[in-house]
Length: 372
Image (cartoon, rainbow, N blue to C red; front, top):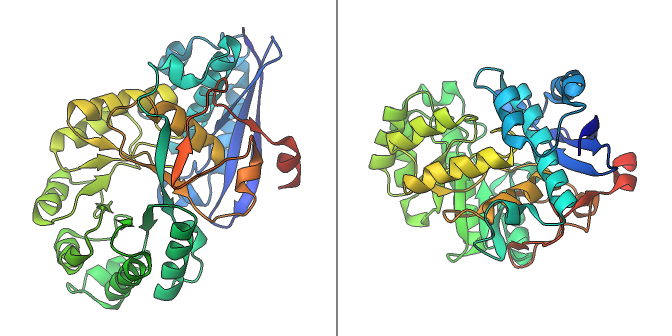
């Protein structure tokens, strides 16, 4: 079974970013799907980069036509290396997901069976409320967190420090922007109660000293983790933060290669790593990185603030990973998200059940692609 065409669809979502879907067609008439969203650079990854990703996929089309869909490892070795850049890696990752979808469909089995079988029947997800929280007041953060809990989520993530800047932290104290972030977190905890897990994403906006001070201010809230407290440019500094705070550290969403994750794991600075199936090379590389983390006694919690196809790809892979902690879910971004795929995406009591449908177990809803 060989590739005979590759196409992309960009679905407008919000000003914080659109979703890019990949379709790989074969000479047997099958179509596999993948997701290549958020292919920009740095924080722009969430609001741009789509044009470059789409162009890369179209540029690769002549080299892909005629290739066997079953040679996924060879595809990765030929096309994914360490220095091509974020948009390119995102493009390759989306194509790779679609190849796995095709292999599963051709063999009439779900992808998780091809990766060693499932460790669990369902995947716990947390609601990342950041992309749905437009009014950044503490009350609005709290209201959205409560709404997600009312929908059955048992874990919430917020990004309350996005207005913290270099100017804020250069003053050396917990200034107004940091104090506002702390107030947002406290309001969320009050709204959701003590039994719901709460994660805080700092988006690498702190230096070491201020992060340690801020973490101490949050000690009594019993956070599930602090994510990306400082930039990953200094792993020794990150280790110092980890050793100086009472809460676990999660990081790694900006890393894309096994070598980068190896360095992070060897530093012993992280309790959770956050590889993203859309950027690390796809499903097989996510599985390999998870195995590296398992050997280092580190939990995996995939980064996935994106659309339903990458969620499905992450679910298929992480069902086979013993050291899965929890999976990210971009809560509340658009009300039509679930219907973008067939069968509609469904979360029950904070879990996504593992499907036994072939491949990823979903198809893109063509009518929604045309309308959105």
